[in-house]
Every structure is written in C-alpha cells, then in structure tokens.
Length: 520
Image 1 (cartoon, rainbow, N blue to C red):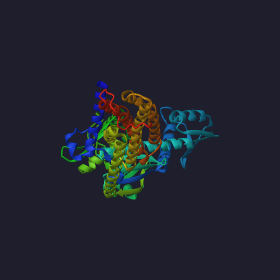
Image 2 (cartoon, rainbow, N blue to C red):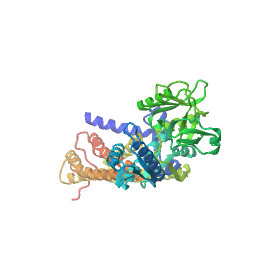
Image 3 (cartoon, helix red, strand yellow):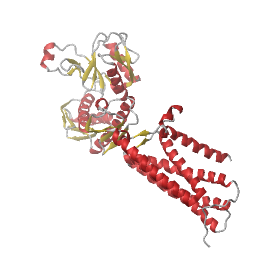
Image 4 (cartoon, one colour):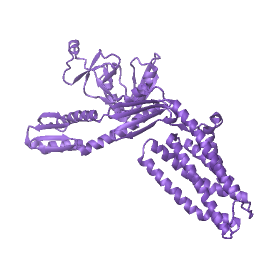
C-alpha cells in the first residue's frame, strides 16, 4: 500500500509542478522554485548574437608577451645576466643570438625553466628560437573559446537576463540567444569588452612637450583617458598589479555619495598592491582598462588590506557595468559581433497558438481512440497520458529547461511513445485472457511480461537522446532534453502509475474486462 501511495504522491507532485505553466495566473500561490517553464527565442522573441573569438589578435599579444618574458629571463640579475643580441619577434617567432657560445646550455636551461613545455625551443649555432607549435596554438584557441563562453555567461547572468543560451559553434564562434531582450545594444557592448585591467605607475618625469609630440620615452606609454581621448597619461609599461588578481568588485558610493567601484584582491594581489602603495606614497598610479586610463589618483597612504576604490566620474549604471566586467574576468581574446538578429515575439505567439490548437486536436483524437478500443482501461490510459504530459512540463520547468519548438516536437514524440507503452501491456493482457487466465492473473502477467519490451524501447530512446544532447547544439539539445525527460516520465506513468490505477479499478476482484473480445 505504501508503494502505491508513493506512486500517487509523485504523480500529483509532477502535475502540481506544471500548474504555474498551464495556469500562469496561479503562479503567485506557489513557492518561487515552482515557476513556469521558460520559453526559448523562437517562442518568446528576443535577440541573437553570433560572436567570433579573435584568436589572431590573441596570438599577437601572446607573441609580445613571449618577447618580454624572454628578455626578462635573459637579464635576470638574481640568476645572472646572459649576454645576447638581435632579440626579435617575427610573426610570433621570437629569436635571439648569444654573445658567447658557451652560454648556450645555461640559456636554454633557464628558458625551459621559465616556459616548460608551453613553448617550443630550438637552437642553431648561437641562435635560440622560441615559438608556439600548431598543436599548442590549437589548444590555446580551444581554451580561449571555453574561457570566453564562461566569461560571457557570467557577464550576462550578472545582468539578470532570463534563461540565456550560450554555446560554441564551429570551433571559434559563440552563439548567444537572449529571449525577451528587445534591444541587445547594451549587452553587446558589455560582453564585447575585453576588460583587461592593470595598474601602472605614472611617469612624472615626462614633460608637456614630450606629451604634445606623442613620442614616449623608452619604457613609457601615452594612454588616453577613458572619457577623453585627447588627454593622455604617461604611464610606465611595467604592470605593477594585474587585474587577474582581483577576487571581487562591486559598485558602491564614496563619502561624497558619488558612484565608485570597490575592488578586493586575492592574497598575492593584495601583497603586490600593498607593496606598490607603500613604496610610492605621494606618487600617482594609473588604473588602465583595455588600454585606456580609468583614473590616475595619487597614493595618499599605504593600502595594506588588499581593498581598493576606483573613482572616475561614474554614473551608477557605469559603476555597476564596470564591476560586472571586473568580477567576471578578462576575456582571453577580443570578441567580434559578426551577426545580430532580433526576433519579434509575434512569431512565437502565433506558433504557440497554432501549437495549442494542433496539440488539442491530436490529444482529443488519441483519448477517444483509447476509450473506444480499451473502454475502462482506455480511460485509465488517458489519465496516465495527461499526467505524463503534465510531468514533462513540470519537471522541465523545475530543471530550468527552456522550451523551444524542437522541445515541443520532443514532447509530441514522447506522447506518441507513451501511448505505445500503454498499448503493449494492454495487448499482452488480451493474449493472457485468450489463453484462459483470470482477469487478475492476466493483468499481473500482462504487465510483468511486457515490462521488458517497454524498458528496451524506452531505454533505447533515452540513449539516443543523451547522444543528441552530448554532441548536438542549440535546437537539437532542446529536443534531446524534453525527449529524455519524457522517457523517464513515460516509464513511471506507464509501468507504475497505470498499474496502480488498474489495481484500484479491479479492487482485487476478477472483474470482467469489457474491451476483451475473444474469437471463437
């Protein structure tokens, strides 16, 4: 009895999960975690962006970084300076020539200790060449794509956008679908920023004449202000603290009630930031974001706690956007918007309306067919079928799945398979009755002997759905999700709920089963 009550409880709970979706006005009477199912872009309308990960620019930056690291490794004063000449960066290939041939093993060992296996190191005479192999470039590109997807996801989630779909496409593209978003300009601007933040000391020795000439001294760069490209700040090229050390950032207000961005560094970043502010009191340092200066304040006192504050005449929204960018991390490569679409909600509304009519017609015909052919058992099968439909919708909503047109196709296919899963035990019961079994024994044997067939068929469908989910993308995944959920709910309703309802109908008695007709 307890098992039967548990089956009924699960069925009722599954139906209740679907109520907020089927009757939206009733959502307010349910807890927040029992919410309506989210509609996809093709049903709700919204924006779609196709982004390309600019790996070419990333590799250029990597080669510049490689050049700087090679130079630093060779002139490391703690380990000893290795004399060299002709340090060059030619299309991502960094090379140098040693002054003394006997330094070759020493230089090669030092470079290997710095780069490990991330860079190919080759020698010819006194020349050392460092470059990224094709395999290393492929791995770097794949890593950049994966990191970019995760960062884009964090940035969009931080804005509160409902049910975005973000996935890779073609090895170097990111497809972003934003249901319910009519104007994607703000989001496009936000996710397209690289958001690479660094801290540099300001070179106070640069004269106004040098700034006007635009020719920066060695080791110095003239960077524009974020809000005024005409005003430039002379900053040292050396990065004192990197934005990669940021642990958190939030929009806040300063003592003058002006919007600012507060930053919190991790342990290593806090140590470097404390060292910077301790050793350079009364000097200016520049906070640089994507090559532009956010602000260049004067260090009034040491900041040992790893907490900083960025001010720069922000609006509240600007402070919030910058906090999101810094909190989500820097993109490993620039993103280029190569395609943008806006889908109106009208198409989705028409589709939903037509889908309701078509589904209603199909369900009515199926219900009538089951009643005409199987009588009382047909009514039970109809109840089970409707419960199955409600459970698919309810479980999908609970899991946070997004309903799309392919998802609806998955539901329709599942209902067709559910009818078949009901018919199999019913026909087996018919065969048992024809063989002379009593109705109770026929029901018991009918379900027992058809279970293996139903399980085989449904598990095969589940395997196919899981493969589609693993290797598919976009609409195919939506189809696979609803199909997988439908397989599980079908097994529950057709093998467990149906049996419980039939047992209650039979009441432990050998009732005459009206749909059975035995040919004599």
